[in-house]
Length: 364
Ligand SMILES: Cc1cc2nc3c(=O)[nH]c(=O)nc-3n(C[C@H](O)[C@H](O)[C@H](O)COP(=O)(O)OP(=O)(O)OC[C@H]3O[C@@H](n4cnc5c(N)ncnc54)[C@H](O)[C@@H]3O)c2cc1C
Image (tube, rainbow, N blue to C red; front, side, top):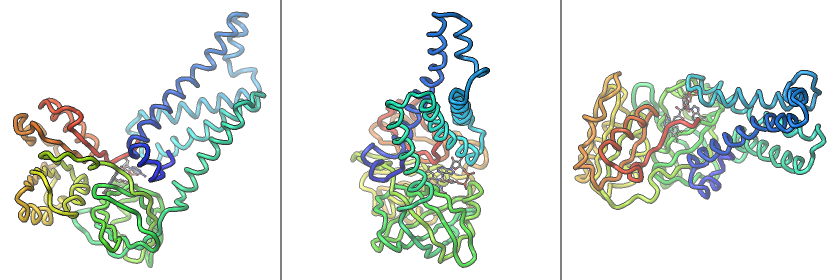
């Protein structure tokens, strides 16, 4: 997961890279789990005692224990992938342990005297992990920006304008960037890269981001001030790529309104478009006034803004019926739970998966 914008574009987007990353990781993990069993099965031909000796971590030496340590790290890291209740930060630390596990596994082979083709693979793994840490996590090569303004737009949400200090990132409406905020006159950022959708990209290369307080870092960002340094990676995402000239249904859940806002700010819609904007309460509904003004000025845009309260909304009663949706392209963006419900409701109306496009607001 090198998170290089150019590479992501070439491979069909960061989301697709994550899918490949997960599937190849899982396949490699299954093979790794099977290999001590395969070695033991091979030894079984000679004697069951030898098979047990091969499998048991007891009475072994350092090279083999290093292999076991690698497998244990892999098991813990991957178990966390399936346990949704693990906090994101803990999950990230455990996930990073997988990289360490790969290195330990390869060193285990070298210590066993198997250096071909292990040494070149070890070199490549170290290079790619180093690349990811230095360029991705430490942000070497990310573009420097300065916070120009920060305006509250709803309860627990602020819109931040960023001014480039060098080359600006190239953004199309609906794309997102990875941003880390650092220090300002009296603000100390958390310094980690987090993904945020660009809500508008101006001609003078200013970019705007709407940041909702969803966790420790984003809660802290609510008190950001002009003059804070930021670093920006990207842009990523192909949510609105290859849009067809057909009527459209856009469904936004809470902060999921940001890509639709970006598209509307870039110009009027070209097809009849319904934007169903779901939020808990009016005080949470960021950009609602602006969206209402845009809908009033554009006869093709139909805005349906619905306060759902704290209960999960009845999506079936909110969505247009199957007959109205025939021939529509549907675009969904919101929290993962809502997206699953929306997908189910649209599929039950006979909408084929290829007509449903979505952006999930979380990588895991
Ligand atoms: C493509 C995309 C676009 C997004 N656009 C916006 C936006 O326009 N406005 C907005 O307010 N939020 C947006 N988010 C969500 C935002 O990134 C998270 O709310 C933020 O990272 C939370 O960080 P935290 O430390 O405050 O909270 P935490 O409690 O650490 O995390 C809360 C949840 O946010 C997600 N998250 C946290 N850190 C990361 C990370 N480094 N990378 C990916 N996901 C992470 C995880 O799903 C996690 O469970 C977007 C997310 C994605 C993936």
